[in-house]
Amino acid sequence: MSRIFGGARQVGYVVRDIEKAMRHWSEVLGVGPWFYKEEVGTTEFRYQGQVSRPPRLSIALANSGALQIELIQQRDDAPSLYLDSLRAGGECAQHVAFWTLDNFDEFCGHLVSRGYVEGHGGRMGLRGRFAYFVHPDLPSGMIEVSEMKGGKGEYFEEIRKAGESWDGSAPIRPRT
Image 1 (spheres, one colour):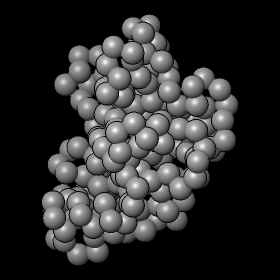
Image 2: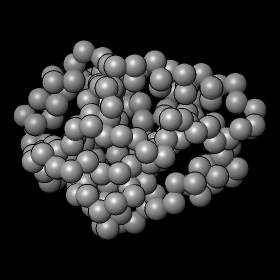
Image 3: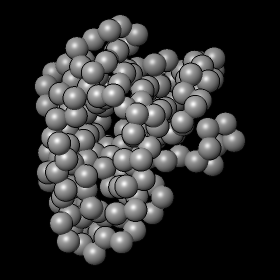
């Protein structure tokens, strides 16, 4: 538990084959069901402080208890921390996310005031904003701040509840 941000709510993994990763997590590790969007639809994007072309992303979400697991596959070469992470370390746990309804700017400001730099950020659809931060003293400790507005909080709660009662059926649930 962070005394500043509350509990870590998500661990995000960058992967090269999201379908394979979902199968592994559900069949081998028993985590699911996976709520899968082949085309996320990022509407705003910044990379290294500059407005940038949004990456084409596929994302899958499932919960293991209260912790959300996110699988991310980038399907183009737009600049992003997702590609940077894949190039530097291959498939890996890339970030830890903290969620907020009303303190997005405060949380981001706190990180910046302590030497963090926004690596990338933006918005997906009409849902709340997101920002990923890196620090030169802890390059492997990427932090995401995710705003739970625009229906994102309700969607994430639906995913958590589905995981509580999941019996192993329908492990991948495509979303539009």
